[in-house]
View 1 (cartoon, rainbow, N blue to C red):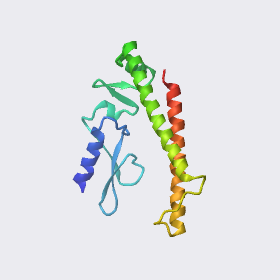
View 2: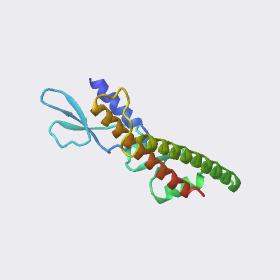
View 3: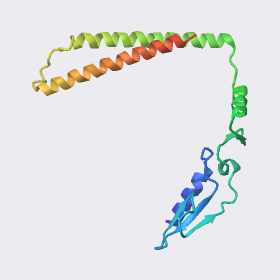
Amino acid sequence: MKFLAVGALLCLACLGDVQAQNDVYVCTDENGAKEYKNTGTTKGCRKVELPGLPAAVLQPKRAMQGGTAVASGAGTTAAIVASFPKVDPNTQKSRDSDRKLLLQDELNTEEKKLAGLRAEFNNGEPERRGDERNYAKYQERVAGMRDDMARSERNIAALKRELANVR
């Protein structure tokens, strides 16, 4: 059990995205069971030194960039934006045009789907099927149809918003 706890602690410490606390304590209770914590406020706790850990793990609010630790903040954002690959305007226009065509195609498909759902819904009174002798089963299908129509309407609204954002 001790090896499992130490192994888990070391795995967490080695992850690049982990923002660890600066101090780790091992606490032993009256039965001799050990527990690792980030606070040593209880009786029987002692601080554990963790040598060899990267500075990015030991210091909170640090980010890794290009293999070196960089403090997060406005300067980091500017460095990331500056290193982002550029695309020439003609390529971007072509991509935007393709995106607009795809979104328009999805919008048309979703509008056809909604029209079909509304026709089948028949103003809240869809035809009962032969397998729906139980009225509760019919009501369940009608509720499902309402949900499908509402989802389709939300999809159409989202696609229209997305199309409005395309240049």
